[in-house]
Length: 474
Image 1 (tube, one colour):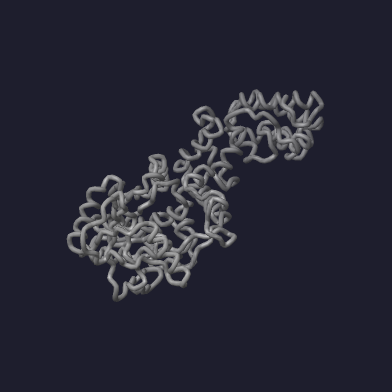
Image 2: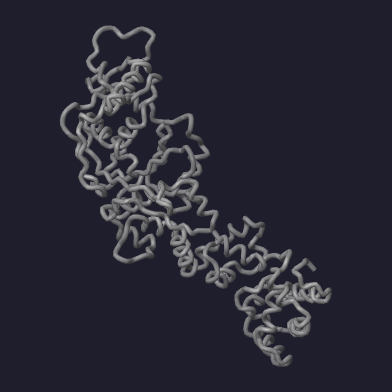
């Protein structure tokens, strides 16, 4: 048997983090077993579904690298097939037309609630005979079995047993002829030969109804695995109030896709004490049966720790494009400045995200408007004038503009002035970077280049000469 899994989001908004984890688990299960991963867009809610949301889902899947083998299939393009199956069920006596009015159903529900009974359709039209009422557009209901049980051998939750007496006759087509969600999902899984349905546990109540419809169609049942929800650190279901829950929000925040995938895989699944997993590791080791059956808690600090690990250990060439995108977001064209790979090598230990790395690397590509106020007050003082002026003169005639000769100049100037190295290096750092923290000053100068370095030293000297030292633009 070839394993066939699917991810079936509704295009009514962005791809949220819970959906991304479900997609990852489905993708990993297919990849581990040499199977097929299918993307299906469940857009039967025509009022809320938008092409923008479809594009957002596709963009998120592409960014995460969750490539699909078949699809994307849109339910809105399969309406003829759904109507065909409804007609078949009606012809076989496995579905029926229901003419009950909305008022009758509401009255029925209120009475059941008052008697503390579970609200459910009472089957009035199940065996209705005679001519159809005029002027009434009926719904179509599935003829659910009244006896027996539905047994789900869930890979995550274990055995789940539901009595058919707890289920009513589900509406599978509304009065306007539009098929309902629970029905079209079944037809899709049947037609697409899905072997494993991995989805959020908010669908667990739908599963017995869908199984009964699959049986009515004579279909082989898929294996189910219902993934527990994700909670915020406050113990409540993850939502917008917890911050970035859209996949592309994480992209914008400078999280690497491999870091997010690693974190999502560990959000409810484990393999011993291992924390860091490459995609290849996940494909080799992932087993949906090892997913925890309790809710997972989203810990943003842990995600940042993982992201920093990937920043430090990934080949810089691999993350250059995403780093360049972050630079572009703050108005910097990385083609005009030092080699982006060399900047990454310098800054990767100093940032937790690509966004932060871009912000602290901006000085490599453009002049800064203001000095960091505390750094200017401390280091761009009258005492710094002589070291800066001497460095400026020495650097102007330096032939080999690389890290080692630049460091030698720094040492020589400090010795000539009888100063500790920091008394020369720190004013120079603030002068060329605008702040008191940067990579090693020699490699920083090497990347900045002679012209930029000298121009910025001149600016700092002018500021000192003005006697302000308050971080104002010179």
